[in-house]
Length: 445
Image 1 (spheres, one colour):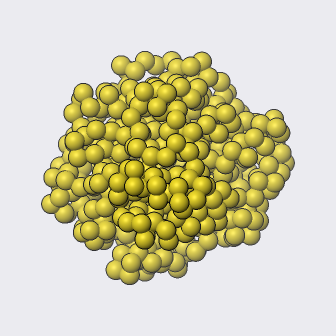
Image 2 (image 1 turned 120 degrees about the vertical axis):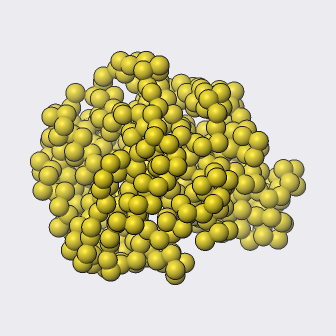
């Protein structure tokens, strides 16, 4: 097991990893940009190293500075958290070349699953259904038009690298396909340094369901059940829950088995999330694998009682998973709301500024993962998420009630946040009845 690691990230995930490290007797080294100099979690780290100015390109995305910090701090491994360099294959390779452990999957697995076209081919090999789409990257507009005619509109253009909705466009006819094709390629190139895109049939009114898995170096792989991430805006998740409220036990078992087949086929190691679309008939289609810990991992921790960050550290340190699938139990219902510094009344525009009043909620079944405090200034340099509110109760109705109560208690002023939007969603009769799809927010908010 590691004795000292570096965390190549910031905010609540950095704090989350520091806490897991300390509970395991591991020293944690934090890095920070000048914008994060006053972050309170830095005081909890065993050492904190400044890696540059606020601009992520010069700090959290600057690989030479991260590696230099790791060498100066004399760490054994680096945990990338999520976002930033977490799925950067070049970063993982450099860690490997420098003799620094990467707390994540092997480079080969990242290469295989990081490209969505290769991942689709692997899923087919594992006998897992995929959404009908191009066999590889679409080279030009003419090819895209032919494929759209073959699949039938609507179709979706997707970047082969990256995620988060960038380089993604849904189109309904030839005219919009022509304009969207080059726009998607340009956006993908700017976001990921790779402008290649592929085409898929667009599944109407789908649910987005993902399976949490862990795999070790000995070939053991286990699932930790699924999370429903259907409530999202512009492909960015807002509310996650477990279990998926529309799946029965047979559906759940088939979905989990499909996820594990993909993970084993890829010879994957460490934590991953296998993502699927669920159509109106509850048929599931593989879409991609996230080769990192997810923002919404606390949902799984609440319903299974397993600390996923600690598992990441154990597996990366060479430990085998010494539990069986039957020992992983799913209890109750957990829901997570992402609290972003955005104004729902102004098209979710960013709402930076200094928090002068901060009162987090509490009570039975309530968990708050955050790095902010009264006096913290929300900058514009980074993602707008400032907190995650998670609840766990025996039933979905109780979990919704607890979440609404906790959101009502949560005070973050004077900046605008997505708390009112989350309350609106939780109170909507279609959400309560689980009759939602990935376009719910656009239609009803």
